[in-house]
Structure formats: C-alpha cells, structure tokens
Amino acid sequence: MNAIEISNLTKNYGEKQALAGLQMTVPVGAIYGFIGENGCGKSTTEKIICGLIHPTSGSIKLFGKDYTDAAVRSSIGVLIESPGCFPALTVWNNLMIQATNLSLPNKADAVREVLTLVRMEGAAGNKYKNCSLGMKQRVGIAMALLGQPKLLVLDEPINGLDADGMRIMREILVDVARKGTTVLISSHILGELEKVATHYGIMRHGKMVVEMTADELERSCPTFVALQTKDLATTKTVLEKQYKQVLTDEQQEFLRVYDAESAESVVKYLYAQGIIVTALKTDKIGLEEYYINLMARKEGK
Amino acid sequence: MGNKSFQRLKGMLAVDFYRLLHTPLWYIFLAIAAIIPAMIIGTTGMEGSQTAPLFTNVWEAIAVANPLYVIETIGQYANMNMVFIFGGIMVSIFIGHDYKSGYVKQLFTTHAKKQDYVMSKTITCAFAMATMCLTYLLGTVLAGLLVGLSFSVNFGSLVCALLGKLLMSFGWASLYVLINIIFRKHFWISIMLSFFFGTGILIIGVAGLVGNSAVLNLFLYGSSVYACLSSNLLSVVVCGLCSAVWTVIYNLVGTYILNKSDVY
Image 1 (spheres, rainbow over the protein chains, first blue to last red):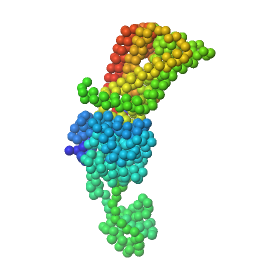
Image 2 (cartoon, rainbow over the protein chains, first blue to last red):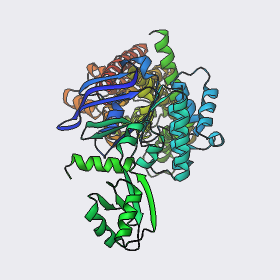
Image 3 (cartoon, chains in turn purple, brown):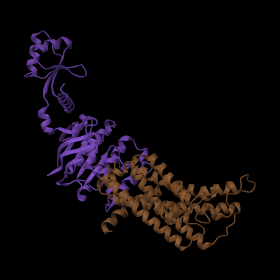
Image 4 (tube, one colour):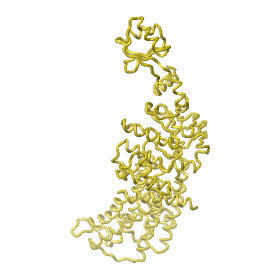
C-alpha cells in the first residue's frame, strides 16, 4: 500500500493553474524528497494533502482511503511554512494546546515524548517567541509528531537552519522514519535532502517530471574523472581533443571528464601530451547537479 | 450532538479558553471596558469640570431610558453598547492570531470540524464580551460613586437591561466571528468592518429614514438598544431570541464558507 497516491490533480487560482494533472506516489515508510523550483506547485500539493485547500479536480488517496476520511486525517502531522504556535505561550503550552486539540489521552506524557524526540527537553519552559529559528522548527516538528502520525508533511523545514540545526533535523527525520512514519519533505537544500531521502519526486510547472528511489538516482547519476593540473585552461584544450564531455567545476579547481573509460586512461593520455596531473579523483554527480541538468534539459538548454 | 462531537467541541473550547485566559488580550479589553465609562463620567461630571455632565444618573451610562434607535445626543450612544464595538476589535485580534500564527494549519489538517471551530470561537468570544459588560458595569458604578451621581433606578428594569445586554453578547460575537472568517486573510478589513457594524450605523440610518420602530429589534443593534432602563421580561426574551437566531444564522454561514473555501 502507498501512503500517498495522487492522480490527475489540478488546482486553479482564477486564470492561473498551479497544478496541471499531477501524478504522485509515496510508498509507506519512505522519506520522500519533494523537489522543484519556487512556484512549481509543491506547497499547493502539500496544502491539498493536508486539507487546507480544495483541489479543482483529481483524486488523492492516503493509505488507500480518500484524503477527506476523518480517520486518515487524524493520522497526519504537518509543518507547513512555519509552526502554528502562539508566540506569547511557552513551548510546553503550545504543545499542550495541540495535544488537547488532538484529544490525546495522556497529554503531558505525549508532549514529553515528542520533546525528547526533537532534543528540546530543556527548552519546554521557553516562550516560543524567544526560541531560535532552529528551535522553532523543532517545536514545529514536535507538534507535527504529537499523536504519532503515520504521515508527516514537512514544507521547507530546514530553511534557515545552521549546520548543527540541519544535523539535528536530519537525525530526527531518520528516527521518525525508522519508527514507521512516512515523511514527505520539500526543500531547496538538495545536499541535505540527499542525506536522508529514500525517494524523490521532481516537479515542474505543476506536473511531476520524475519519481525515483535513491538507488535509481544513484544509478542515473554519471561518474566522472576529476583532475587538477598546473594549467587548467591548456589541459582543457588538450582533453577536448580526446574527450567530448570536459567541464570545469563550479569552483574552477578541477576539470571533469565525463566520458573517460577510467582515471588511468586520462592520466596516461595527458602524460603522453606532456601534462602532469597533480590531483585525481573519481566521483558522481549529486542530486543537485542531477536536478539542475534535468531542469536544463526540460528547458531545452 | 453526538458524544464524539461534544468531546471534540469540548477540546476546542478548552484550548480557546486557555488562550483567552493565558494571553494579555482579554485582560486588556476588560480594562478598556472598565475605563471607558469611568472616563466618560469622570471627565464630564467632576466638580469644577468645565464640561457639562453627560449624565445625572449613573445608570444612563449603562443604557438609555427608552429604546430610541436614532440617537439625539452623544449620551444616548455612550452606554454599554460600546462594549460590543470594542468587543469586535477583540474578536478580530483573537481570530486574527489563529491565522497569523498558522495555528489553523495544525487545527484543520488533523481533525477539526469547521462547525466546531465556529462554535468554539463564538462561545469564547461571547464569554469575553459578556465579561467586558460586567467590568463596564463595575467601572460605571465606581465612577458614579466617585463623581456623586444619582443611583435611583427601577431595579427590575435595570436587571432586565443588563441581562438583555449580556444575552446580546452571543449575537454580536457570532457576527464578528463571521466577519473574521470571511476576511480571514485581511486582518484590517475585519477590524474596520467589526467597528462599522458594531456602531450600528446601518440601523441608525434605517431608523433615521423610517423612524423608531419595534421591527428594528429584529437586528442586533436594535435589540441592544431595546435592552434599556425601561426594560421588562419581554425585553430579555426579545434580546435572547434575536441573539440566538442571529447566532445560528451567522454560525451556519461561517461554517459553510469555511467548508467551501480554502482555509489557509
């Protein structure tokens, strides 16, 4: 069974079409990285899943049932944009409010449990407005986790976090997924997403461009030989005589050869041309480059 | 209402009352409600004051002597009905926080019925406005004692007038809840419209054209004026009925709008 199954979903805002026949499948237990440029319809999709906005047409099934089903709705945890907390109240009180809304039988224990899960046991008494951005995001996750949801919908939860905040968020997501919760997470920070996601969905202009598992992504990402010499410009000219795909990396430090048989063959070729390689490695392109290349291909660049 | 629905509404009411009691908003408006009559009476009736006293009897600050829908002096306007104007602003801020903080996202994603939300807000805000009426009464009595105004009154009529005003809190709260649901993404429009309807400009305008008529009691402002110092049990019944009918209508419309439109 899939946690989310979306078929032909459309959403119009007047003349503007935010979703144009979206198809999407999120397996149970996945950490699903939801990717796309700003305005491509990610947040709209998430808000529809959460029942905050109505679709124009299409079908959404959560755990095999219609998304409006009351039992299904009560098994969703959500953090969209920012946590829905009252600034003047403490972290503890904000969480107790959500626990009351959810009619949880043992509110205090449930709140303590989620606070431990998000490593915020010591900050329960802090007023929400005095929390740092990272802490606020973690309160939002804690709030979403109350009631042990089967599906967690997170919209840009790592935006603005420092390195430590991102690490903690990563650990939390892995913990949550290990306990069987399906996570749908959208983010522009693809490097971070790559560290936790088991599945990906890439959207463009209100449609799904591609859905794949992390293994499929791994297989789709080409390997390349990266090398350094004393004169990259000359080396590039020389390499282009032998190889078709030679590029300089973003930092202008390495040359990348994408169509070489092996690193050894490149070194031998350059040595024969009188060029000494000073540094050498083989690597794979990551999610970010894969995404950029995919979008460039879609735009016909 | 089924047991499950009642439990759900009870949970939401618990949260709304918790917020009301644990944030400064309600206390600020309670103080405002107490200070308004004290300022009106105090600044116009003090010995040696240059201004002519607005009231000679303290209870005129609570309600007019007879139900006049078209006001002739500012004194006929400056009574407990003002609580319903300030109450509108309080309701706008209270509900505005739900949207500004994003609280409604958590609420409507998981479980909440829109009907429960509307009912819970109406009950909480009606309670808040009713308590504002009580602090208004307290402020009036203290200021009256301080200034030395007359306290003579038909006690039965006064009690009926007060009961009528308290009952009207429900009707007014439901109107403001509806306005805030319609303009939930436009906080300032909600506040301005609350003020506009709270002052009863429309009813005063209609009364100006057609004259004083008991038909105006069908409306919130009309019934609020009807709860006056010549009130009797019929006035209380009229206020209760008017308030209840409008509460049901406004709640149904509010629930329909929330069900049919995008929440956030």
